[in-house]
Image (cartoon, rainbow, N blue to C red; front, side, top):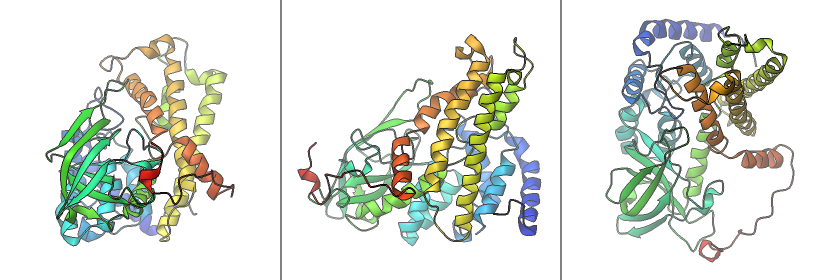
Length: 407
């Protein structure tokens, strides 16, 4: 692809840059508050999201009727690039607008889209995605949460875990087992529902970082109208796949987490360390160079994905490569950045050193990032099978009713 802006793209970049220069300074976040999931400064994040939605920058590629501009993926990327030049609040809407709402737009009714898309785009409402369970993580089709038909409703019971943002979410999308006598990948149905429905209990999971962005969700006879089913009954796996494709794009960001390669280089050039600039030490320089190459590779892979989208194609296995590199690179960069501080790198006090606090957040978050959106092992399997053409793993659960599989 041509990495230079076309005349049209250059004009859009100038427009976006001017708009951001006018509006972004009023939304500078607190330097001592932050978390990788982006929930620490919700009021400011919502206000910035609403400002972008008003100017139709909140979701550039969406149709005008959904609040977008019907723009190109390249324009969306250009705006992201320009937005990163400013100090702005965290972005807690990745799951809402990158996974849940696109699924609703693809599979929902006109009435549902008219009701739910505008407030989600403005940031007025927050959505979460209830997929993972204690026995269904990478093997998502192993979900055991039950959905039993009762007239015009479904009665849903079970447990979900690692649900990001459930403690703040207004609505959620959920994959549940509606026909246990069907084969594993069938007999699943997909719904959306109000997170404040009777029978929904959310328990935040306190993480080692001190944040609680992840949650356990317990559902006890939660009634969901059949009108809130997305896709055909028993065909929820097809809907889930569309969500997972969107998720892979969201977690493939080159600025995954709370620090990026530019932050690492700037820190390494800082003269405030007792031993001098970290970048002047050969071992550090080599590790920084390795991180830079990985970050550049991930960025160019994303360019390839954007090119595919701009041609009306779906991204291929390169999405797995990008996410595999981005998550592990974040972990390496955060560890290296803490090494610059020596023994002081373990001191956690954001009021004393907000920059170190962001690095520590990134280090804690990176381990989860290597699980979210597909574990490293699953991604390597994808590359092995779809790129290298290697045989698939042996599957002993094919063509067997789910209720006959061993627990």
